[in-house]
Length: 431
Image (tube, rainbow, N blue to C red; front, side, top):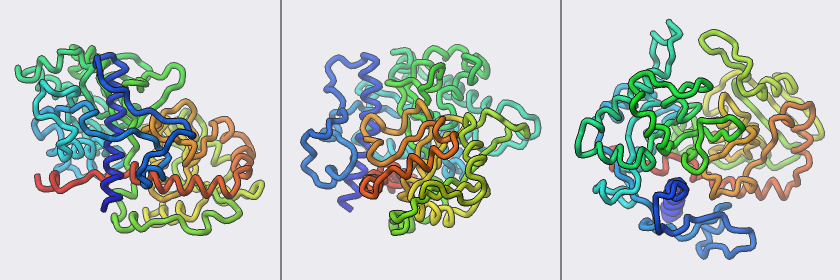
């Protein structure tokens, strides 16, 4: 139980430090202590052995060091009522918006009941829930599925603007101190602009565009490549997607999950199971995954391919969550190529399964990467190498048993930080 509380404290600290960096970078705080930074490897480790075992370096996590967040009391139609109407809102890879709201409401130490004492203002709108709820008319007509998302955000802003108690906070700093969750593929782009088409003024967002551009977004998207506009480094906070194991498997199974011994035995086994092509309203999208997943299928086929002592398995068909978990646990590595955007749920799945993630996504910021030393528990492979014949198994074959074993140990240490179950409490369940 003490270990769980420590992990929750670290998770809260990492997330809030991300917000603190966002706030500091915008020069909105005049004398705030510097946020915790990653230390050099030769720096003194924390005194607590559990903290020392984590591949993350933070200063003491004192709640008073973090900016307090005021949660706007929006009507339930913008959040909890949506979950009651559609359980898919709370059981999909996009459901971090639900979990983060629950975390805030169940953690008084990070929340301010007084808006005048708050440094941030959270707008609890489950816009991704609205986006992912099945809509037959969208499938039938091919209409823009993001119109509902934009309309809902606009309605929430209209509600705040119509209440004198909140409107001056909304406009006071031009949105710089306001937070929205945007946990779909392209984050802030799906909230107030069409990807690749500039700013959209449709669906009631027109007069709010200034503050929407300035807000802090909690999102999965961390694309930093040239021309990317859906993630603002130093402002937005990248969250991990929700693993399918969190909403499809019992918690007891995940808590007892450990990588099987064969995962650390030769030959090394790298597995990928997932979509290698994507159809948008029935039309094939050649730009999906920037061709990486298609290349994996082309190079390694359906089944096993052995090269330089490394077995690579590529499979496209879906299996049950239990079988998928078993496959990951038995593998030495789990291949995590980008999807439409740089992020992928497969990364969260592999962390939960204790399978070393091979991250294939150029120019991407990953969850909490200002604080987590990703090189200690993941393997990064460029999109070009992953798409070139023989390069992936060659790179993996050069890793030693000691390197892999150490990475596995570190992966298990950070695994609780990627779990949304750890921040669920009785507070919310009683509402």
